[in-house]
Length: 205
Image (cartoon, rainbow, N blue to C red; front, side, top):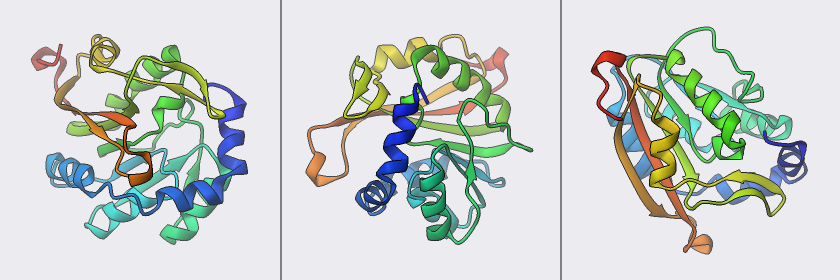
């Protein structure tokens, strides 16, 4: 995380945060992601929070490795999923194998811009050829502390700049949508689906 206050926020409010997000309907984005994935291989849920999306993927027949930086959220998600959740900072996580897909929903946005670039540049190495990376960010141009957490917002231009030098990622879909939680309608999110390709054939930049 960009600073300890973000992890402190999630550890201190883990139960409330999990309750407020576990029933948020992300099925549309999850289904789109699942349709894009190669036939075989596990999903890395990078920043699993309550475990909501990991559970959805498991229920749809995919093996999942769930990771989060908050020990308290890992405990809650582990109970919810009935399996171990790896507690690890995004910047330090090194998987043992490769994944069909990486799901980073509202998680990498807690990294500062420089850290964000370095972490994302590593992610294609965690994917099989043809694997899918999903990321979502609050939409806008803000970076800094907001409501007790560090955020890096993104817009279309920011996403393009972020991925410009990563020639092994091809953007398949980029969209802006409203928050799925009714009480937060008006908060926009930007989501990007990318596929790992041979750098010589990448057409995203």
